[in-house]
Length: 443
Image 1 (spheres, rainbow, N blue to C red):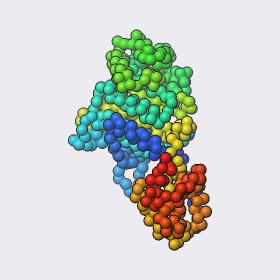
Image 2 (image 1 turned 45 degrees about the vertical axis):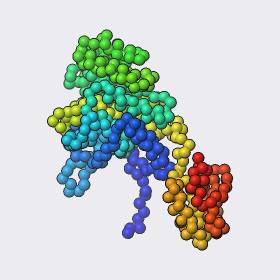
Image 3 (image 1 turned 30 degrees about the horizontal axis):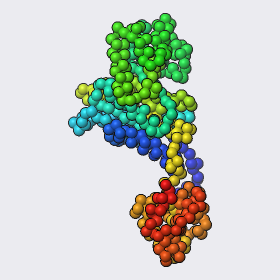
Image 4 (image 1 turned 30 degrees about the vertical axis):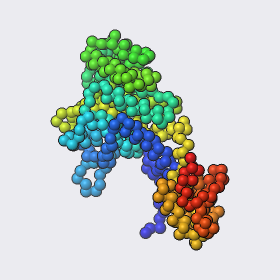
């Protein structure tokens, strides 16, 4: 083996998660997974790698520049790392159509990869938590998806957030009303999608640079930036262009969606209609939604919508589908910032440290550790020779809350001495009662 030392480092935008961080992540994953179960969603897992033909042509030109190609020497298949979990879901529904019962409500919690410029809250490898409903065209499904997002964020403790709602059909109608040609609708979506980054003036400038007439841009922007309370934005559009079929359908869908949200006990304070929210991915066909927490601004923390045509790329007939993706990495960042983790999420899963007084008591300490584990106590035991004081120091540094001591006298008497490190409280109990007392001291 070479004597040359390799500098340990990671690729840009990638991260390691040490145990203390992983405990927080697993807490968030667990809460979100429980919410998915509350709404009747079941788990799905798909491969990290997909065939290139499965992924390409589904996301739009800007997004597909971020897809990682993944080949190995001599490999004949053209492969890519998955960009999201939605297109793999569409493939699964097409591939296993005889085995899937509709409606198909699935969730997936898995890493995805995008070659973006790394920055705060944005990484090249990150986890997505997706929930989708396949086979339901009614707005009741979209309302349930929004209900999942609202419920998850409230169970995690977020005090304020806003689910922005729009409809791709309305964006198309606004373009038609303003005089944008069908060929330029893609330019319209891409430019308006940058509204949060470049503002109204920036969007106007970019649309003009893309070849859309100044008067057309002005007419369109007046509608896009409408800011009326409640469903007032829909009233503005209906008065201006309610006779356009795409507008009529899009407005009707959002009114139905709002009614279902009300029936689902979702507060109007938790969502708003916002025509500047586009969702950049090319496969959306109807209602779209994006959740933001404005202070501090880490961008959106969930996004999704209806994509009724995507599954049709993988089977004879398409299926109406709607879903959401929770930006779990940004949610975790905000959980730290707002101090939302409960007190029991500490730096270790270990509940008790079993010391070894000396070699004469090691066998009994080993048996005690096994007895405690058998009763559901998470235990670490001293595995090498070390002075008792050093063992206490080790437990304290690890954040282990409780230490069990079993010296020769305790072994003879059939007792165990327990010490809680946070306040120094010590108790001595019969060995058979040690697990119950540990649970009591930790409660």
